[in-house]
Length: 114
Image 1 (cartoon, rainbow, N blue to C red):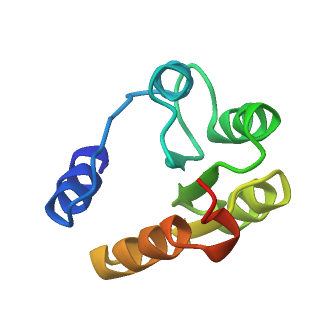
Image 2: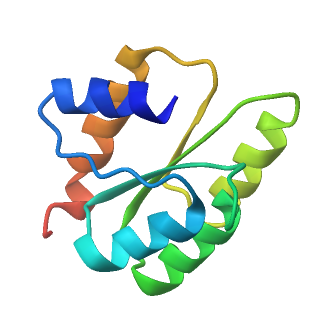
């Protein structure tokens, strides 16, 4: 799934850096300081909820897109939104939905000072 999303975002002209788990995502965030972080909720080493909380404490303005699938996805995505995710997508979603959501998050007027 991560590779598919990366290809779609790269194909749309975005620069993408991947991490295989929450800990790696956090390390990449501190090193690269991206405008947007896309995280799955269920991940090894650091769950997406933990990642969202830490990112939000570190950078209140960072755009965070949470994604989740499975039977508990609505519960996970509601929790992610309550804890600081800027937007959420429920798997399965279309590439068009992903690209639209990413474009909206990156061009949000409230974030235009970045």
